[in-house]
Picture 1 (cartoon, rainbow, N blue to C red):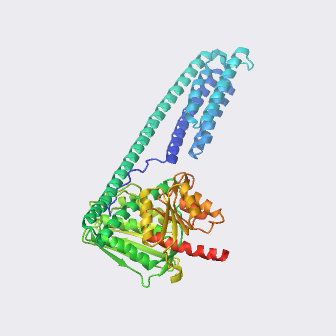
Picture 2 (picture 1 turned 120 degrees about the horizontal axis):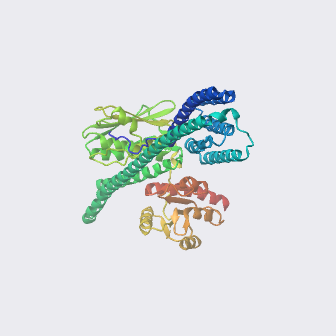
Picture 3 (picture 1 turned 90 degrees about the horizontal axis):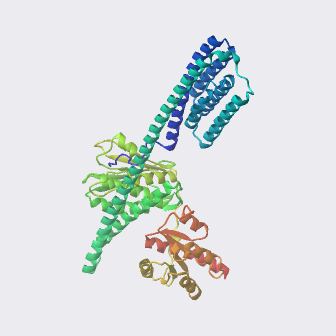
Length: 576
């Protein structure tokens, strides 16, 4: 089963980029500390020898010691402390020597360096503003001192002020050039980051374009098959069972693609899957899934072989929709990528507390590099038989996690691939025959709230086939009129209707004494809606009897009607 390397994996995450920026600032701070240490030791000794003033030497040694401390703090990766210590050290040094010398020594030109380095080493805007404000205050204080001499200049240095002047100009010049060099490096780094981000955007755009193209291509192929068979059967006046199977498989493939996209949208939004564990007839589920995919496998001259444990569990607690999604995606991939005239195995094993599903194919296999990337979204090589949208595996992995299990893969070149789904095994008590829908649905009055004329007609046609009496409404007024004028047994309502929703219907019925025992079944093609992370979960929480996803499985709808109508009748008999 061949899958390409990821096309949308960012080269640097946001946290990684921040770490790179911090290390860049740390590098700048260390270099400034090393240069300042050298200047402090060199000029401190020279000025002491020229003036004989120990205060100059002591101040220079203190500055050198602080530079060593800055380097040590940086080595311990305490970057913020190192930045603050660097700025404070240079401000204090400038202020001290600015007060010591007269205006003939341009110590205040260090302000240029201090302002520039403040904007370079501080990352937050508020820190930069505070630092620049402090530099401005320091400048005003030195200028004021030159005017009023509130701190008299050191008389020992006045004879050598010309020499000090040239030293200061040289030092400030060197530090300013070094600062400009660091700025140029930062600019190059920012340009590289911008380029990387543009490449990410372009890569993501290409991945989305590829997904849309391949999804559209796959949907068009499946719908063309259905459309062609329908035209054939219209001309022939009959619909052979094999044709009906082909149409159902084609439509189901389109549904699966849509479900994968919607499920991945939930993952991208950080929303949890709504998991609902219910008793599931394991044998019926296996027969259904194998029957569906065996037909598709045979169309490629493949054999789908089911291997069961002895004994296989009869009933388990499981979210059937989630399990269907996982196994369907894996079997679809196996059929896509397995070589013709070979065998695909669906092997099931159980332990005391786990159930394992193995999907084993005889495709060309994957190397270790591809095996690492196969669960990335929008990544696929496609196949000559079916194109691929690249969402089946990532959706299946996330859904396995939501069920409390995991999905893993094993493969080697030329040896095929094996995907293993491990899920918790929770046995369920066999459901009695009486718990299954046995009620005769004839003459049951069903109110269908659906605004799409074609869907309304299809629902009505299928329910009437079960001999139900169907009333339809596509507006709020029509719906309420039907409730007032007809004896309605159950409501089947679309989630999104003109001017109101299926949730409004649930509220109206539950809050009206004459209607409160009428069960409401909500149908919807949506899974996400605004601030509600899951429509199904919300609808059930406010009183909907069932929630069914579109396109509707009409056997499932009939079963749901039968299941919800019996409890409603019992409730009504108790209240009469």
